[in-house]
Image 1 (tube, chains in turn red, purple):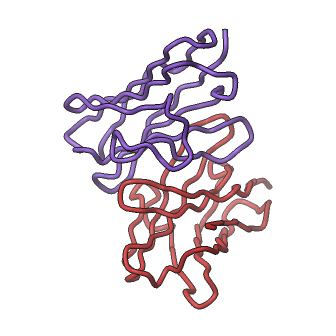
Image 2 (cartoon, chains in turn red, yellow):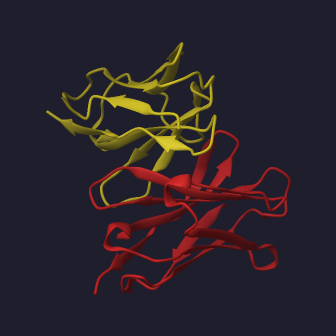
Length: 118
Length: 107
């Protein structure tokens, strides 16, 4: 059974760095073809893809967030991570991690709400 | 970036009615398209992948089709549990992009 769960600080101040953890089970990020992605959703809005990390450590980022994103993984502990620097109120959203298989995200975490406020 | 133009933005339909949601890709994405359902307060769930393949456990009343760069999600007989928002997503090119969503309500 594949499960994913996000964790994060909940609230942070503008200009701070957001650190998110995705803890997963039921698959390994060392297995050929596996990938974990991060997607966010602002309140009442649509979905925005942020980054992917593949089994071979290939990483892809949404250029709309320029150089603010860093994705990484800990294969031994079945975790993936996302850091976003210089957080702004516009980054307030629910952040999801999801397992990606070729064309789709087939399993999603429950999401973690992140609020940026001074 | 590949733009996914989704319509309608909202939809109200009666139980047992046929519902169709469409996504128009700004360029050729082949079959690199997925559809998701998001119920209120929940995370998105995969419905359709590779444009026409039904995800595991998804009722057969859901189906996906493609005509060129236009993709459609059809619900053949709308049920109460189908209320929520629906999103398309292309995986042909980075950055991955989603449609703006369709909010489906029961009339």
